[in-house]
Length: 163
Image (cartoon, rainbow, N blue to C red; front, side):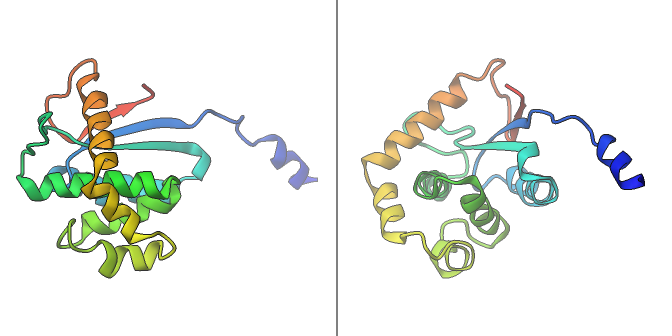
């Protein structure tokens, strides 16, 4: 009898929270937010509760000159191409968490993070994206998404909730 009543006490279904994170792969504050707050929260919540969009671009310029130098541009490109190749957030977010929590965003992809979290992904395809026109087009899209923020972002991480 009590069990049947408990079923009636469940909260009504709600739309997931839409969270967009505009960040830079080497920004210390961005890494701290992603590793210590966003990823653990995402792991604890039911998957249907939170839709996350990651936009690695931040304070970069259109020529892809990054605030923390060329290695950050490479890190942004690696993460962008990884997202494009993996397609599924549940596949690529643990890899990005691993990259951002490790010692080197640009050196830990295959050696550690990809092998642990998604060995089925083709590193060669990710590298081809990073070094080719697809990666540039994806970064251009990230630049457009960042430039379209209203109000404009003043710093990173920049977090947008429900639009």
